Image (cartoon, rainbow, N blue to C red):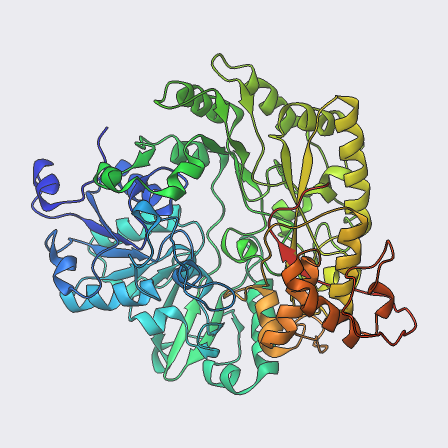
Length: 620
């Protein structure tokens, strides 16, 4: 089966003079189910539509949007697999030098705010053709939102882009419904009720009905308290079972966010992932060395969606939702068997995971009828008494995968919830995970060691990680392997004071962990943590939250996470002095730095620490 058309000639070869849909993306075209563009394109193709792919068009040339001719039904536009601003800038707002979703990893192939730019170009090219935006960038910006890069509150991306409809979430079923209604001749302006979509109508034409109303765009621009209220409403109603329609005024227009589209059933999930993907990037990129982001997932398998962990800083809950949906065991096995026949496969399945690898069923039966609980988390600060824990199904799946002829190893690299694992009274999965599915390092995400900071993050308390770590190394020793934990941590998260950062540094030294990379908290649209960063308020308690924002505050917290590096000594010493932690300066076994030659004024020891993010850590 060939790639989806990328030229006018390929459209003509299908016996068509124009496509039904032109799918525009900020990524290179990779025909693999880890890329949203490929999924939506193949889903529409399977439904009988002709879809052309316009990948990383020249945004300075309007004619790019006319290369296929006028699409019969609509332009479908996304910024790429990740937000285009995150793709371009670091947490320090510095320009990145590479882009994993562009050919050769080269930066600069897409514009800032790609969804907005592409939408305006599509409207300019063909003013009468509907424009539907989707993907992560649009999904997380569907309401008025704080934008970190401009340090301002921006209107809904639907308003800013001039698009007709916004599709949020994973998008398959709402895209099919929209396609059918457009192909049936319905005017795009009359399509107002599709679940999983956002539309706007003039205030005078809006028909009141059951809905949760957020403070208006104008009010959230003026009041941080109103912004926090708005954030809570949006998070609480993002539930496919009990969620209400959400409305928000933008000037003389009403933004109407319909309730989420229900997650795919297992049968639908199987069908989507077994469509005839080429499972590689388009050959046009071969001369540039391919697309780095494709290499990461080429021999990996997605078995689930959703995450009931719902960390405050993570966008998954606001995009995929908290309800877990899974592919069938048979479907995953068929994909694994197919991988063994692919060119370049060397016997290693790099991952069998998803947002959280070891979630294979709902957290409890209640949520299937009543939805997930408002304002509560299934795992934090402590596991819910109603939590149903079992790794048996996932364990059986991994066992069958590693028994397939041609498969040497099956790894779990997408990360597990260690706190959920520790709730399982049966150690069988833990032991087999450590023995068979760890490629030397296992990724876990304690994120911090200060329980106060962890509460702001929506993460379990550090005692859960300590228990998990102890058990991991005990089993590793029993099976005679040398393996490591790679615990992700975060610096400068809202709620993290200098005292907390010092506590984290002390924790790292005690645990003999040395992070090789450090990442500050990154305020991306649509998360609770970003709301706290902007407003200084917890949207669920309306209590004030300390937020490290200045370059100096962030630099000190980041340096403390890598206290052992000579270049950080000065910053660490200044931070310790500012906190009165002279007991951690010197030659003692618990000291973080030796200190300068200037005589120190000793101060009483104080408890230390709160927050820091990193990427690779190893036990020494």
